Length: 267
Image: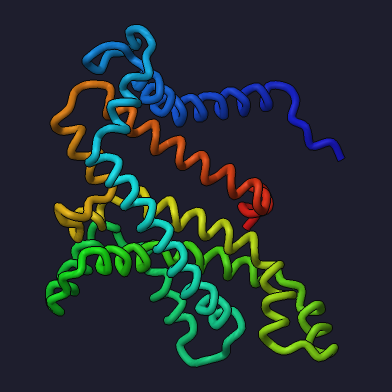
């Protein structure tokens, strides 16, 4: 069967798609172009071409420390979220217990509530218990916000697992742990990978939660960037944004090399 679109409908569809791509990519291209401007102020079109703003940004201690802190926080959050969410998703998919639908709804509820409200609620919770460790508070808060992404993708992957392979492994004497690691996990690996990438990016770029819980000694890069926007008018802000964009693209490319982007996103 030939599914290729032709005629007027195809032209309209391609035009709409092109317009949407321009609408989505134009702000990103604009920011990247400004980051190479030779002007001392943000102007468009950019004046000249230079890399000096990148050199200046990499010498900005506040930005580099914020970038390192956000990267470490995002990696830690991803590892903790995956460690907790994969068993949780497995229990929701395979377990039979009273209130399973309610538990599933509670676990996925951070996807529904506004992140700003979630951050404020966590701030009140931590303040009530008198917790003073900012790094631990940020790790717990980011894990709460990002875990539903992993749970959702792993749940979908578990629905696609071939039960015959699992039964065959158990019949041949494999333990439950070996069955999971050698039969089940390879089948759900794309779901774990796609959930991990969402988890990392949401944590790395999370401003609403970090705004409530961060302090002057532990500033994630979104807060640093927001402060720079309010006080700096040169292209260094665009340069910082470009570096973050490049890091996001690099993470996606790594995912594509590891499991294949199409396969990981085929949920």
